[in-house]
Length: 300
Ligand code: GLU
Figure 1 (cartoon, protein in one colour):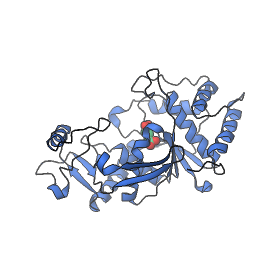
Figure 2 (cartoon, protein in one colour):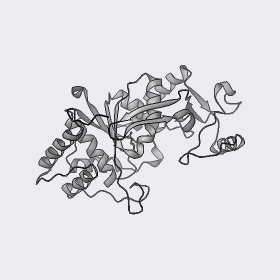
Figure 3 (cartoon, protein in one colour):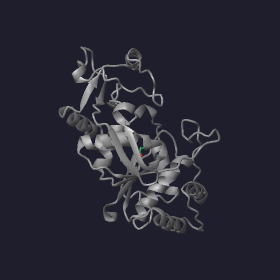
Figure 4 (tube, helix red, strand yellow):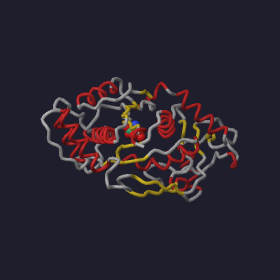
């Protein structure tokens, strides 16, 4: 397994890295190094309206300042629409995806009618209005494309968080693969790219753990293998919420890379002291390998 290890860091260029995103970047880099694997960077600019011009270059520079160099040139999701369309076509041909004419307001009204108006994390569980067996588009124009979620509960195991389950059909419903504005959804792009790049291990922030069951369903639907997952602890802001660009997290200052790396390492439960960047990264890799490497005792 270690020889075939391919990991990745997949930032959305909606702004520069902040202290929280460095934790995920560092953990994914350390895990790849501890397994003797490769580490890739993928710029997730699929949600074009949210991207900030130049943020990709800033992120790559911040990573380089911290000594985190990808083993191949970064891949950009904005250049891969043809691949996502191909995957969507495959799902449609297999009866696993269908077009949907519903607006958010339509969905809210239908959920209300069904007495199921409870939003889940603010997201609405799609009531299946446009499912082919319910009459499809009802003569309206297609807006979005959705996955037909037929499986019941998805069970998976996170290397840090342990066993996880989610009833995707009940808790999420048929989710969007291609949005009404024409852009491909994160869920489809991430699964297609992880598959295409042969990603064997995904290490990312715990805020993304809730997406994993959906992504495993999509992997099954597309005949792709399921990577191993490790979701890292989140950095909380002063208000107790996850640090994010949306709630004004400061750009990571990488003029003193060791200070930035020490803070990230602390969140990961590592305590590293070294005078140079190279020594720091080597010491951190050894500590990570002892906790999470191929010969570590921790097995979830
Ligand atoms: N692009 C996503 C983000 O920045 C991360 C995707 C992933 O790691 O699966 O939140």
